[in-house]
Amino acid sequence: MPDTLWMGAGVAGPKPTLVSKLERGEERHARDGQGEPLICSSCGKRRNGGILNASCTARDPLHELLLMASHLFMLWGRRAERRFMAFRAFLRCRRALNWEDDDDTFMADWEDMMNAAIAAQSPCVDRRFWSKRTSTVWWDHIVLQTWDDQEWLQNFHMRKQTFLELCEELTPALRRQSTQFREPIPVQKRVAIAIWKLATPGCYRSVASQFGVGKSTVGLVVMEVCDAILKVVYPRVVAMKNVPEIRAAFQKMGFPNCAGAIDATHVPIVCPPEGANEYANCNGYYSLVLQGLVDHRGRFMNTNVGSTGKVHDAKVLTRSGIYMLGQAGTLFPPNDIVINGVSVPTVILGDPAYPLLPWLMTPYHGHMSPGKRKFNETLSNCRVVVEHAFGRLKARWRCLQNRLDANVANAIRMIVACCTLHNICEAKGEYFCTEWSQDTDGLLNRFAQPESAPINTSTCSREAREIRDAICAHILATQEDPKE
Image (cartoon, rainbow, N blue to C red; front, side, top):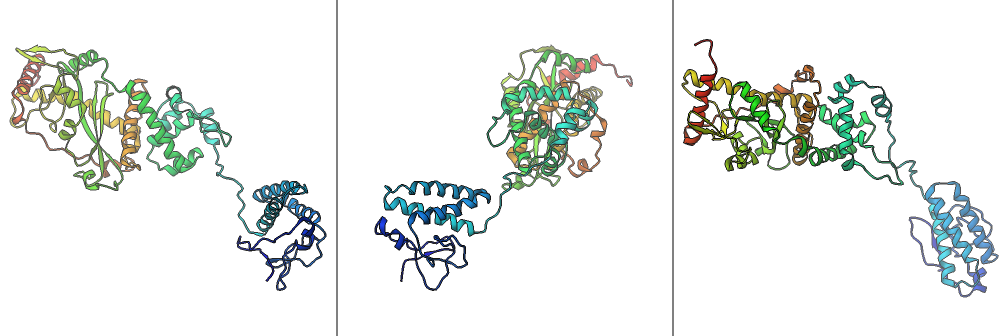
């Protein structure tokens, strides 16, 4: 059976064998009596059939190559991939016209043209674009150019000037290099996407539609901005600064030598793929515990995020850096005062879920004298700043009210970023709208905060009890109770 070249399914049969350049005109075509030629290399006519054979008289190799090259060159007006193959084959055709080339080069050029002819007959899908174009008119021409501070506050929960200052600080960490494919998303738009996601309970798809980007792009941008905030902004705004000023403020509120209040809150998350039982709190939903130490203005001085919802507040404390520093006596600069003959260090305030420590004051339990009730009342009035801080934090950054749609590691970064943005807004004096605190979606009832069991203070150290009693006597002596 004579050698043939099969056309179809991308499979080629044996190559025609050429003896010499003088015999190419006679041996150029493969023959098969059962098929019709698809393209006749002599006359250039297109015919139906699956076999390429010779039904016309071949003139010479030059004529064949020129006819085939002209046919491939006609493919120039078709799809991009076929144009490339045709152009490459045409260049090789020109090289093949050099009669000094050997037979192997001649056959390689011939095979390239045959493959291009096969590709011209094969169906393919047109790729008109490699990424879907979306509209960015809302951000580029409406938000940036027409919105006033009131609209910025309602939607981004901060004024435009505060937003621009934040973008300027994050620019070195978020700037991306332009490439020949497309321009990167500007830093301002990246920060706006992240803040919008953190300030609203909406899903990634809604944010993507709002800013004219892809849903996966929103997820990447949010985490990149959160990482930049943690690396650049967090060390500057979340720190134990101005301790003397904080002590003086709590002294005016009635509690001596106090430098902060501590508490914990639960942030709902989606069900983790591993160890889900550890994240389920006593109220039946999955959560992460955020422990915060705040000053008299409700700004975070220290945060600890990552403990599972099943962990008690006291256990969260013992795992945190605050506990280690407090036990070592290095939480605050030394500033002990003597009250009724007792040396009282700088202390922080906690609720009954925390243990009584020399540097951590908690309320009295059980039957109480008027002095102890006065102590509890004063401690509660001072400690309420941390509860207000958590309330403003979740009202301003509403993603913390609903389940965070991220894995545990990303959820932790988002929570810490929200605490950082909370401090920025508080320091800039951003207006807090009371409407943000309204539970319009019923999320606060759906994800109610679990109550931690009180700690038995009878097992606490004698030093801690003496310090609390001394402070209690001082408060009773300096504050008059109108009922008594």
